[in-house]
Image (tube, rainbow, N blue to C red; front, side):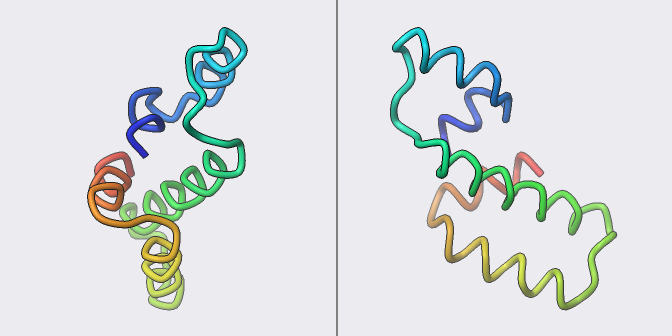
Length: 77
């Protein structure tokens, strides 16, 4: 999650860092899961989510991330 935050969610910058051999602590699947959680949180924050969507977002968040990573994801939404 810290890597996602460091790159401010910029997948292109992250991929370039991987190509340059600078960044290897996340897989593409990890990045996609984090991105999906952050997108769900943004929809929720903007008030565009139903109660079912909010409940599912919280379930996905807790399944995907833990501890400080949850705090970071919420701060990026």
